Image (cartoon, rainbow, N blue to C red; front, side, top):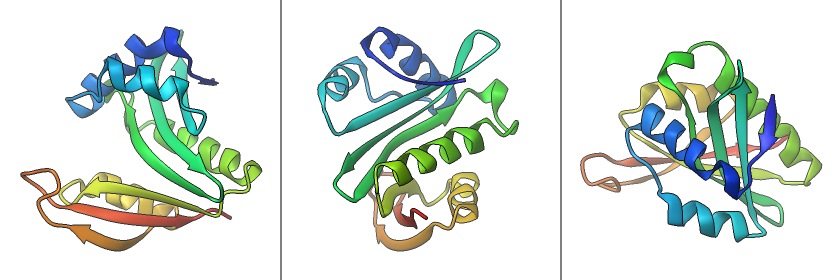
Length: 142
């Protein structure tokens, strides 16, 4: 089940981030995002546990993916694909035309994932993460 997150779920989101990504955007970031009318944050629940989430902003016909993760124990089970497909359908309803995101150049799993959805690399930011470059991907929402 996928739900739209509210402030009561911030600790669950942080728990997912720490498990899946090894770091978090932080509680204050999510407090602000929950008040941002352009922000959309969704949680994926399986077996009465929140195991994945995605955060993005939508402005007019453009969306930007902020963060996306699935707990390690639940990876490679199609959950990320379900979350991402759900979001793409939501973006279509919102009449969004493009989704932009950044991904670490060494994160080959994520790069392959976004390419499966039609993502195209449009730019590279050298040393964006300090120890790694960022690849900027664009997906056309169809």
